[in-house]
Length: 164
Image 1: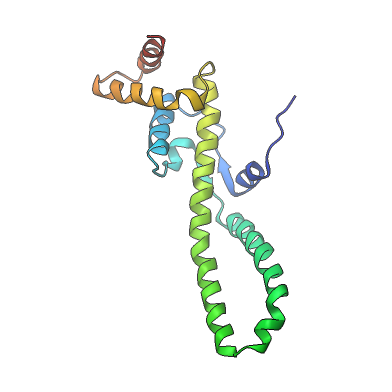
Image 2: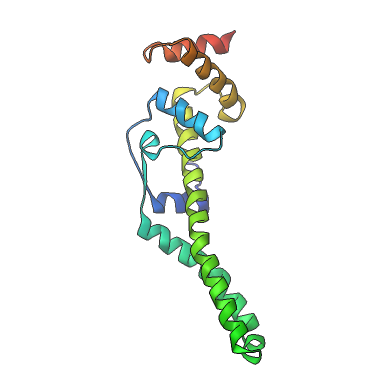
């Protein structure tokens, strides 16, 4: 039975192009480490790209769904006050909208990164749930970098350390 996709996942699929190629284990581990440290993950490592026009459309719909009801409720009050106050308010709201797009894009990028990391995690570590083992495997990966483990032996090294 196919899993129902959430509204957020539908939006992510709409505004991002994702590669059909599986994510390499080393790239997954690097992306997981970057995500856990609160950094932006390199889109090339996870194989996704933003469709900017679609992102603008989704953001526009989100902003309009908030601004239109508020303006309908406050229109009469704002029509009665000094026009200078309305102009200053419009400038502040416009600035907030343009600044908000950067926050929206950043939040969507973090969401798609986590979604792709979890999808790939199920392929590489099907017996180890992401929520329980992401930090532990991150520590093992850092240890493998210090021990200079080759790419070829990385998966076996991680699984051996998990079994200890």
